[in-house]
Image 1 (cartoon, helix red, strand yellow):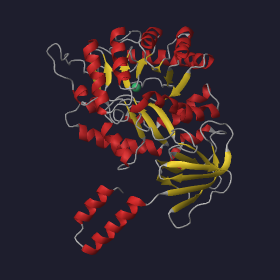
Image 2 (cartoon, rainbow, N blue to C red):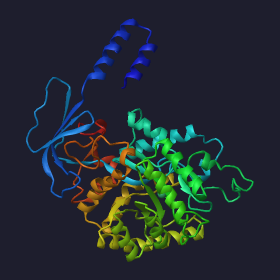
Image 3 (cartoon, rainbow, N blue to C red):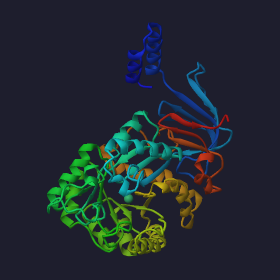
Image 4 (tube, rainbow, N blue to C red):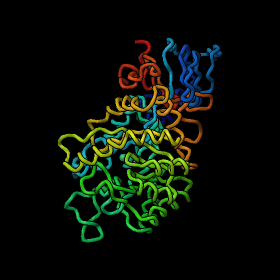
Length: 454
Ligand SMILES: [Zn+2]
């Protein structure tokens, strides 16, 4: 409860005695430190394969001590002691490619007149809570209007993950992010600004000046990184997979505007041509990359860029024929992409990327299992925590969570942890059943779930 809420409550209360009591409580809440001691847990710190049996101390929202020895605490009543019963404690999960708002409904529903920004925020809060309860304490949102709910989650007003927001996806006319309906005319040629654009789904920007404005518009709203579409998409009906989107000058414009704010551009791109052009323009992260060749994979490594990869599913039977074909082509390339990324030591990060497919929300948990084709259980855990957190450093001063470390359990890290009923180093499927396997969930020092005493 924050002080503003306390003062509102006191205004509403008709009784003077209640008012005094609430004021007193507010004073205590405003000053008191929250201390949580989790004892007797098997700690996976996000980096090391070897776990330790020990204790973890959390003061407010920071992990202040991790020790195999008992941690002395102030027994005055302010410390909540949780017996972890020898269970497995690990950092909260990170999903590096999410569309939190845009996966709450289909594209057709989103474009209906009754869906206002406020309504979409309501859906986004609901999905945010579900995502948090799946154990995802941090997400990088790669397109869509999430700035309002992000601030609410950060304040603890609603349960939800930490969000690294990109804002509207930046796309050329005809690009992967051009979300107009087939009959909608361009705003340049007799049409109107599309609803998708007005809602903050994407910006259709052509030419250097428009790309600069679109990038700066997102930065103004609080974007921690900029998402640009640099090539054809699998899920869109009209842009072929092989096309390259944006000229070198346009890509460079986005990079320049982002770098002037101390942050970076990440691009949607599958093909060698789109990826090479992006890297040469100074792009620091590639989303997807399933159709790359060894030479381009090596270039990603040489440039020190990140590759944010997904293990996608085939398109549903109801999808248009060309979408099915495109998705299949991307899936066929996935195996090579993983192999070459490992061979060339590319900085690999992972995300799920569900968009306009609300039913697929829970796949965020089961998609983890697909990674077993290429990675050991330990490598998967490290990818989902410590390694996924490394890309956040590219946001520089635009990183909304600069105060502490993410993706690890160590002294000075944010208190984002999950306690599991089972050891995912031995059986990774534990992570695919969050409802039952997550016994305790803490984000930013706040307990959002605790089944330990049930
Ligand atoms: Zn995406």
